[in-house]
Structure formats: C-alpha cells, structure tokens
Image (tube, rainbow, N blue to C red; front, side, top):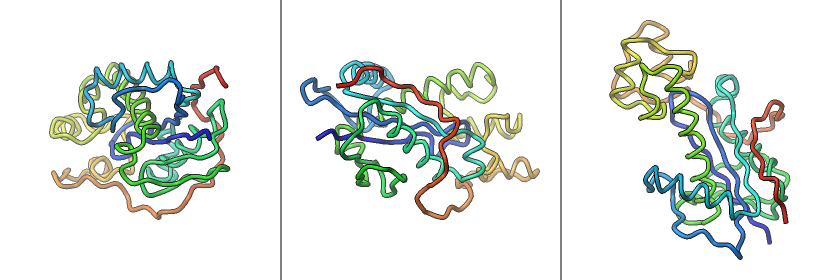
Length: 221
C-alpha cells in the first residue's frame, strides 16, 4: 500500500503564503531521524529535506496564495494547499495521513491524525519538506523587505516583528485579515496579546485548484 503524509506550514504566520507538502516514503529506502519539523534544527531540517526528496517514491510541494488566504481564510487555504500537494504527487497514494484534525477534500481515503507530524514518518517527512521550502521563501521575502526580519521569524508575530509592524506598517506580503495587521491598517494599536486571525468556519474545502504552484518529483515507481 502506498501511504502519503501531508502537512502544512505557515498557518499562524502573519505574512506570505501557506505551504504544504505531501510525501510517499519508500519502505526500501528509509530516512532515519524523522520527527516534527519544529523539533529539528534548521540545519538538520535542510539535510533531511534533501534526503527525503532523494529517497521518496514521490513528493510534492504546493501553496495557497495570499489572495486565497484573504478570500477563503487561512485555515481553508491551508487545506487547499494540502489538497494540491496530494493531487500533485506523481504516484497516486492508496491512503493519506494528514496532520491535525481536519481533512482536505481528496479523491482518495484519508485520515486526520492530531500531532501526526511527531508520530507518523510520512507526515514528519511532509512537515520537514514544507517547512524547509517555506523558510527558503521567507528568506527571499526578507531580501525584498529587510526591515521586517522575515528571515528570522518567518512572518510569525514575535516582539521584533510587532515592533517592525508598528514602525513601518504592513507591507504587501502581510496578511490583511490577520488581526494585528488589520488593526494597524485601521490605525489602531497592536496589542501584545492579539494574535488571532479572523474567525473561521471549519469545513472541508471544495474550491478549484487553478494556479497551483507545485514542484513535482519526476521519478515514479
């Protein structure tokens, strides 16, 4: 049975796109040391990401754009990115394990697994690949807008990021519906405890996938 893992990264960030990855590991070419990407050092994540891409039967990275985040809300956009990643695999999985408690709308059987990125290897692999890809993208964002420090906090609302937002205001890469960004745009003070985006209705996504940004592995079984 071909089992894929899927995970997203960037759900809680106040800037840029949501990234997702789907990975089908090769049982004959195991990757040692897989774990939740947040528990690994950046160097170890990069090493493992390259090994995963080299050894996996299939992998795919996909995104949901800022426009989709604004239109759908960030949670639905993350589910859309995961759907794109699974559908972009060059090998169709028989089963998909998805990190968390929500499932994207998929044409194959799927199970949601809370904290799956620290319990199931294929989800851990997807978590690592997605995290490395988004971190690299945030470094590019930093080059465009160095005043915000995207290379260090990756868009999450650290004290440094909040201070930069107060000083410079939001840039085009910030999520306009995220509460602290929205408050700045409205001319309000950003409270230290204000970290939530708009409220979301939890449902599966059914939006079409036009314009998906996907990197595919050409090899297949």
